[in-house]
Image (cartoon, rainbow, N blue to C red; front, side, top):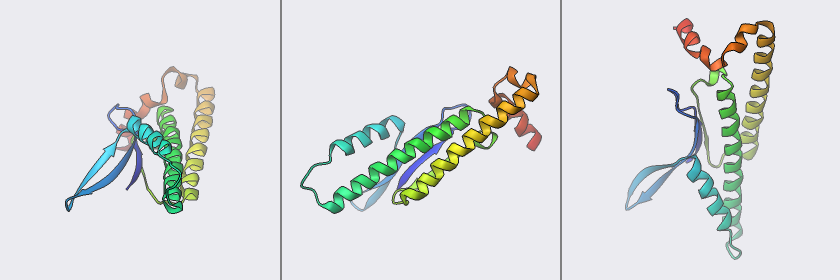
Length: 150
């Protein structure tokens, strides 16, 4: 089906996973691989490239590997933005279905990179203007923000 990245919420670390549906005997079961297993699976797929397979199969494998690499990059950028305390990423979930054109995933990666850079610049400016903001990580303000928005 696709890959996803999420903050995990409630203090748990952000995570990247691969979710797919397995059909056996007329029954379908949704499976998910966590981050470490996704990277192992990607390595297995790359190593499994064997000459003699059809061009269509090879193209599908290459596309899958490229999508997975971009999803790992996107996940890392979202994790960094989450760790930097971005209020919009206190909790998040980002899903990308396999078969999504690479240019669309690249656009998400670029947007995530720009969001992180803008957030780091804004936090730096705020801390230079209000020295007491440097006393705690930005994530320490999440409960205050939730209370103000409630």
